[in-house]
Length: 176
Image (tube, rainbow, N blue to C red; front, side, top):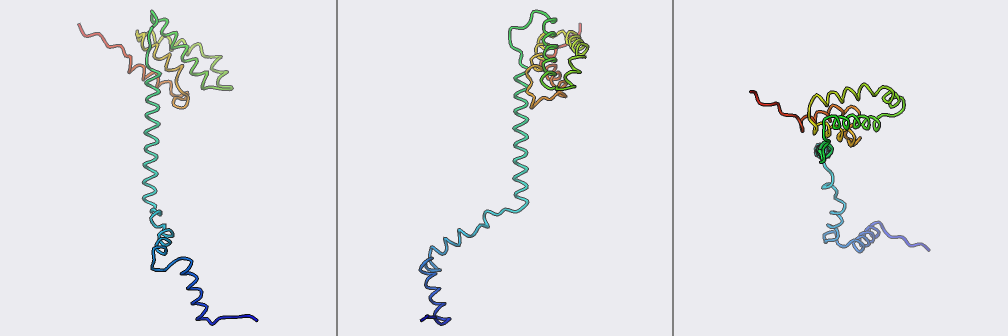
C-alpha cells in the first residue's frame, strides 16, 4: 500500500525539511549561505584586471632592469692589484673578448670566430692601448669575461665597452 501526500502537504513537508536542514530562512545560517554563494566581490571588471597586469609587468621590468644594472656594476668594478702596464691590461681585455664570444657562439658561428678572431682581438687591443687607461682595459676584460648571458647577449659588447668607458674614462688634461 503506497502513501502519497497532497501537493499542499508535500510542499509543507519539503519546506520543513529545508528549514530543519538549513535553519530558518531568516536566521544566520541562511545569510551565511547567501554570503558564501555571493562571489560578486571576487569578480573584477576587465579594466581592473588589465591594470593589475600592467602593474605586474612594470614591476617585472623594473626588477629585471635593476638586476641587469647590478650585474653591470659588479662586472665593471676593477679590483686590485692592477697590471703594471697598459699592455697587460689590454691583453686582459682581448682575452675577455675571446671568452665572451666562446660563451655566446656555437656551431659554425663559433668555428668562424675561432678561425678569424685574431684581427678582432688585435683591433680591440689597439683601441684599448689608445685610451691609455689601465683601469678601463681591466674593466673591459672583466666585463666581457664575466658578463651573464641572460643580460648580455653577443650583441651587448658595445654596451659593455661603453659602461667601462663611462666608468673609467681618462680625464683630458687641463688646457695649458
